[in-house]
Image 1 (tube, helix red, strand yellow):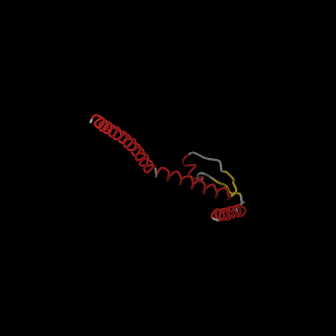
Image 2 (tube, helix red, strand yellow):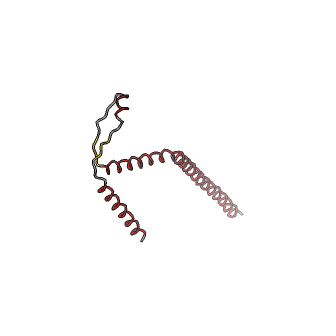
Image 3 (cartoon, helix red, strand yellow):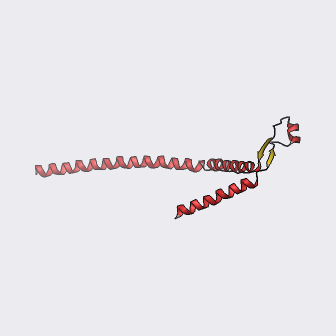
Length: 121
């Protein structure tokens, strides 16, 4: 049921994007810098002519990419802390296993001494 709802929502979004693209097919000129600033800086880029919907979708895609990278960098601290805790937990688990092994050895030695004492007595 949840999968069907997800498919319906994605279909509605896709339909909306197709309608948006069809409504904005007009060719627009995209310039990186305004003419005045390009002349002042001394760098000029050739204008690009694209359909408006590509400019809209490109802006959304770049915004999403910047947002994902920003979040990934922001969460680095949390990932590093989780990694340190995972290493510490692994180290402690190995230490517990080592101590369990030692306690079993000591118990075996005591039982062996008791068995020897019973046999001798």
